[in-house]
Amino acid sequence: MDDTTTRGPRSGSTTPSPAVDLGDDVWLIDTRMGGYDGITAGYLINGDRPCLVETGAATSAGDVVTSLEALGVGPQDLATIVVTHIHLDHAGGVGDLAAAFPRAEVVVHEAGARHLADPSRLMASAARVFGDVLDQLFGQLRPTDAARIRVLDGHGGVDLGGGRRLDSFDSPGHARHHVGLLDSLTGDLYTGDAAGVWTPETGDLRPATPPPEFDLVAALASLERMRERRPTRLLFSHFGPVTDVDTTLDRSVEELRLWVELVRDARGDGLDLDHAVARVRERTAERYALRSIPALEEKIEVLSSTEADVAGIWRWLDAQSVLESTSD
Image (cartoon, rainbow, N blue to C red; front, side):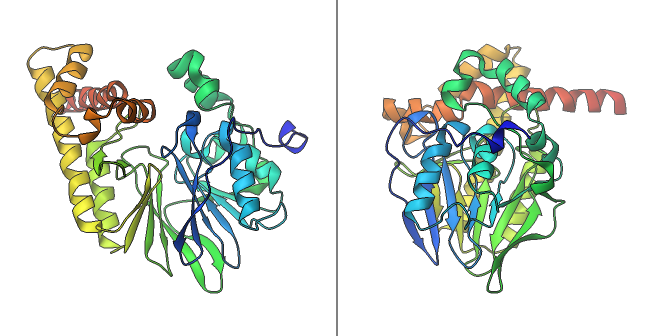
């Protein structure tokens, strides 16, 4: 028996924000990574078979349990926990939530399932990247019994009961183990990080391109798959609902292409990675309204830092250079 069955979920440091009713039994739960409001979202579909989409970080698990209980979802009620991908701001609370809701099936892309059953490699990698702030921002992902994990291979989905379902599709580019989820009743599309980071306070949309798996070609193809499904609303994990779907997806494409070109040009001018980061900051200084709000910019940088996003693009460009040289 692993320790997920013997310990309850860890509590957050503050009182949870009230869940927001988005209609059709969909509720936004602010999972408050690192104590920041409006930075990471989970969504409860509170129908015949209640389903939680995204858990947030492990440090948020106690607050998420409290929010679910306030919505009438007790320990025996949650049917499914599904995550778009296994990064710790989206899936770090899976082990805790699985322990708190022992009947819930855990659903994840097939490439991420083994890391939920045995998080040791994932946590070791995260420790190298985040160092001393790992526990403050994310906490420790606890293992989930492999028998409770169901994998998605880019098809299938989640039964929500009453004929309603979440249909899944592969949406790599941000990560290989990333899926999109479309609600058959509402047309809501759960984007994870595949469409970038939406800032509702200012309407800014920035790409999410961290290492090690960013791939521009795959990311653009994923955005096209989203468009083909003709969603009525985009539900961003960072952060909240957006109804202007076509314009927002157009912006997602534009931002991705812009950041890649900025980094490509910096490399062509002989700049190193640190100077490329500085150039991207300079060239986008007037592009995002959040840059004029220091507290808001700080919050978004904690979530999706310019350094990490440029580093992810840099790594992808390195890989492209290797491919080009070997094909000559």
